[in-house]
Length: 446
Image 1 (spheres, rainbow, N blue to C red):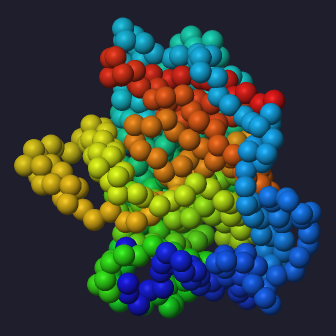
Image 2: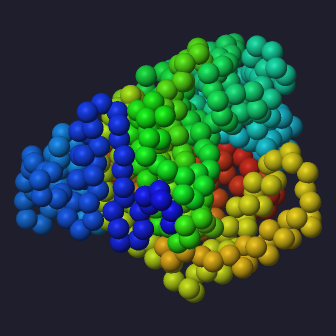
Image 3: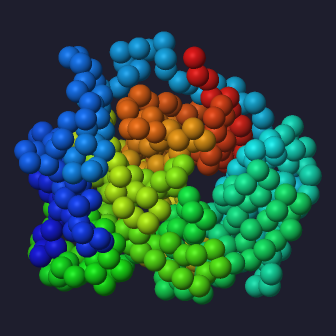
């Protein structure tokens, strides 16, 4: 997916630009992300020499902690492997449940620290359930007034018993306390629609602002124009000089919505059918992000200063020609799922043209590495691998310092919405009824 904008091609090193501060952390990233040897001459200072045979190393590179795993710990020590139970602890919703139907289609679900479950519909209804699955009360109304919602784009737990809901159509967050009382926060400083919204470690609202950079558009100076934020140009480009690039700007808005800051900027090629889009997640006191093209992540402070570079030897990303047909089918299934939950009018002629375009689309030689990243209460990183749409979700798990433990496979038809210390929560699709319900599973750790 070339232009004047530096992009990372297969077998080449990603180009980074950083103008925040003196630039020391930018140099550290350049050293940490080098191809071949992780640390290049003149950049690295070895802090911890790993013994022979070790698969994990930690080093300092110009003030940046560099974590590299050449193998999974669980492969060497399978008795330490984590698994998810195949039998759910709890299911919320059933076929004849008229109450649960009020939140259908379901947007997300979270489990609070007190054990209660909160389920949000994609429109405006929110239901609270006890830890045994019994219904407690309902919140959220349709409208534009205080505590009212037009659409639910994200649901997150913000405290022991409180939640926050992102209303994408109104560009605002609405927080609900443990009794379901709302408090809206209008993001007046926001200059775009947020993607993958979340609440940051410092309480600010986070999200991607995305725009298209046309081929030939200069990259130099973009970071200055974005408030001095770190800029990464990544890639796997396979197009010509006129090809457009996507700029993902990670922004942070103060809780009252009056001030916006740019935390980081990622410039990536236009997504292909099996490519990955940039991801981020607040994890502990940091923000973790990655462009999705390699098994690599960067941890930042809430202000956007890189503190850790993480790389691990994950699965081979080469796409054999024999898998092309299934990848096309997987892409269409994903698109069909998106169409079902949108309110846009369905044009069968236009849809047929899109399907034909998918069938003719040139597939890249390599797929994206992952689709998402999340953190658990202990700070472990859960990275969702880029697999076929109808396959079970598989996550690579890394310790807070960046050691690669291995993979955890989720129950079939479960779309994970939250990973806790000892549980996994998600939306489970019932193949027999073609309906989704909320399921809670036990996370087993030796």
